[in-house]
Image 1 (spheres, each protein chain N blue to C red):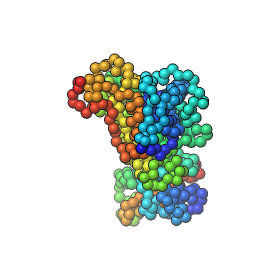
Image 2 (cartoon, chains in turn brown, purple):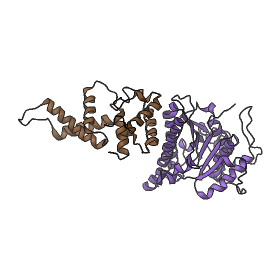
Image 3 (cartoon, rainbow over the protein chains, first blue to last red):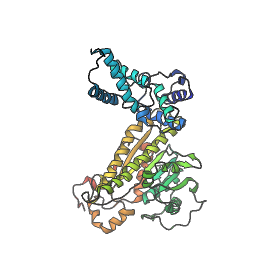
Image 4 (cartoon, rainbow over the protein chains, first blue to last red):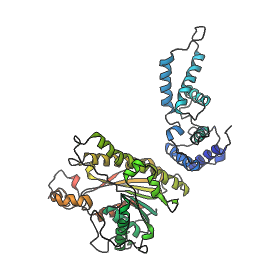
Length: 155
Length: 307
């Protein structure tokens, strides 16, 4: 619903300016690290650009999901201790159900750290990481735009 | 010949003899200079002292890029000498601003720096930052109450970080608005910190001062590492005994310390300011994320009574 709103377009323009790209080539689902030549110092410039364009104070660690994997590991540890193996109503152990429950539990936990990201999106990030196919960060343009909306009190 | 790509300088804690001298040199070089002092009451006398010193400063010698005093009796004390009220028509007056900003202000009001950077309603972001701020605390490590030490470090370290946080973000943003590309070859800014040999050779009672200076040095060094890819570099000048300000008072009370300096004398504020001016030059940019010691050889020698 936010794919082409002013905030998403603004975030695209900031990233494009820093990386010297065409903003039109960026989409909400563009991965900031996987698809683009983003370095850590570029995040600093993204944050500064966001502060100026949107009039917000940017907390880099939250806006760019900097410690996402650390928080996920913490959530997994807490979930494992709290719940143990998942069993169905019939008393059988279900691998799929256990995995779903684990993802949901972790997503709920991560939502307390990243309240600007929808739970479904967090669950998608968790599944992406657990699949292990790409070790680069899961951050997408739309996640940064979501932070801007949150920081501006729009959600 | 030395060149300077930037045109705006900010000297933090520039009311000291070194800061005033550097401000005069930068004005002579045609730069716009903002100087911060600890209290509003010091603004006018410091501005007058800088302009008086500027008037005594030769124009740059373009053959070698050198600047110097046209007479030998430049003011050297901790307080600005008696000067007539600043004349708006004085040479360099329009390029000089002197404003209050104490580290204590930043500890309480993180936005205090914004007032310094705002010039006639718009942000004036410096290319050159020279940090001469020296909040002082003396006391044995085993004697100073932890609460007092915590308050000191909040001012000397955390408030300094607050200034650097805000300054560097403004410098990076200004770089973007100046349409400077990603490459480090593009000059965006230079950060200098005036430190002390106390960092590596503290006297008894200097533990907190030395620790704060050490922390400040590390912040500056790290900034030079982190921001050099964006054209912002840093350097630290560790001064030994300087015959100005608190140093002059100490030297008067302890003249025997000069025997520990192979050169046989303390540095002058003029010498330190000239070294800083050189460190600000384009040609010194490669001196990045490191410290240079200017102490007449004192800390290099095991012999504490060289002379």
